[in-house]
Amino acid sequence: MRRSIFALALATASLSSICASAQTLRIALASEPTAVDPHYHDLTPNNALAQHIFDSLVRQDEQQKLHPSLASSWENDGKNRWTFKLRDGVTFSNGKPFTAEDVVFTFCRTLKNETKVSDSFADVTGNFASVEAPDPKTLVITTTNPEPLLPNLLSALPILSASIVEHGPISYDIAKNCGVTGPWPTVSGFNDGTLAIGTGPYKLKSYSRGSSIELERNPSYWGKAEPWANVRLLPVTNAGPRLAGLLAGDYDVIENPAARDLGRIKNDKRFASVVTPSTRVIYFQLDVARDQSPFVKAEDGKSPLKDVRVRKAMSLAIDRDAIVKRIMDGAAEPAYQYLPTGMFGTQAKPEKLAYDPAQAKKLLAEAGYEKGFQLTLSSTNDRYINDSQITQAVAQYLTQIGIKTEVDAMTRAIYFPRRAKKEFSVALGGWGSGTGEAASFLRQWPPTPNEAKTIGGSNYGGYKNDRFDTLIREAITTLDDAKRDQLLQEAGKIVLADYAFIPIHFESGIWAFKSELDVKGRADQLMLAMSVKPKAK
View 1 (cartoon, rainbow, N blue to C red):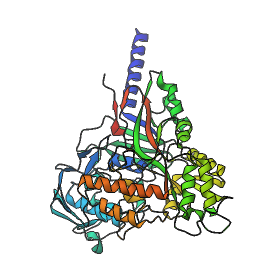
View 2 (cartoon, one colour):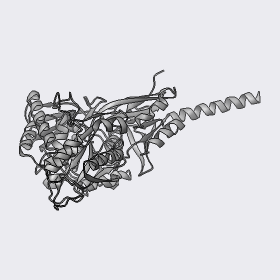
View 3 (spheres, rainbow, N blue to C red):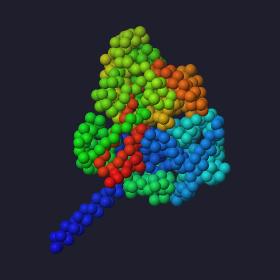
View 4 (tube, helix red, strand yellow):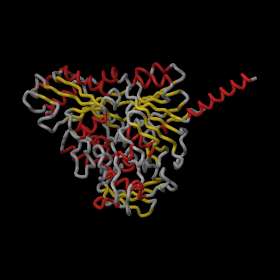
């Protein structure tokens, strides 16, 4: 009898342990967020973390369709004026009520953010001529130029609480500091948790760079409570240890296992996986403006990258099909434009970017570089799927046509600030369309930057084409969908023909997880605990 009681107690304790562990979701991340500050850097890992703690006015689902969030509705007057009605009954995690004042403060902060990397999110708010709050639940935005995609753009902009700063009456008056009387928040205040005040489903418990991010359920969240009381986000940048940790039971979900390893779990009932095509294009951005570029060395002392024949030769040297098959294990698609075919603003039948080393050598000779030149490709080694391997492969292809190429791969925490300072000659990039149409890439990377920096904020290579600039400026202010579609197609063709941005492939998002879970893969590749649910029984 005593043994039976002991056995029962042991079984009960075991069951309690299982139930307790089920309340904690452990996710192994392929790329670690660089900050908790949601405005620090517009990067997918950062944006994914932000969505746990903060909400935006509008949200996107797994297929990037728009839904109400902090804004319950919105409408446009057919010109420059947008009116957003804000959701009732929302409070921040510190108990403060959510009002239009918080949104105005947030917009101001994107333009008063001294610790940001690049011009993250300022490209959106820089187009605001005025922002008014006629009452606590109404927001009226008047843009300087018509912005047909404003709800899409605002879906990526997390809303902060004005209570995190000292202030008087808040107004969208940048010249008068928007009514803020104390110091503006910096990245360190978010990382230590002091300023990480949001309306999202989770609260920040701790942020330990390189170790883990601990989240806990937000009891005051306005939406449906998430099933996980706690979430642990664990950076594991190598695919092998991520998979090994899943198999060993250390993780519940892992990002981006190597596609070749999916076979190891395919017939194991304990695990499952999902592969979701994404809009993320992997490409190389070339320094096409400077006569002497820092990582290019040629006999004539000038930069060969200024010659379009050299840039085209570099594209012809790359075997995209081989990269997709051998390095990406088939979990990608060769890219012949900057957004997958069939999406808004893309060419219906883009010309294939051929692999032709012989033609590449002819073009180099025509440009005066028959003997080639020296070049360094700069790359992350912990951001995109197989990023350093892709860069190594491209370096080998370029070397085969006479361009002696080396690779400098580094952690993204070092890489992105250096790229923003224009320190590279040829830089690996990855861009997923946050709006679901071609304007996302075309307004951010190739344009000549305008004074407000609402376009061209990431034109680190100095690309300039007057015809393209005219087309993209018209496209992003055109409310007529059919006309905007044609303008974007024409603009995209011009950029492709100039080879200042050489597309390689489109990534697919891959997730592997325990079979008792249901995981929805996202086209935007965000790893969200909100996309993970216990499987219905």
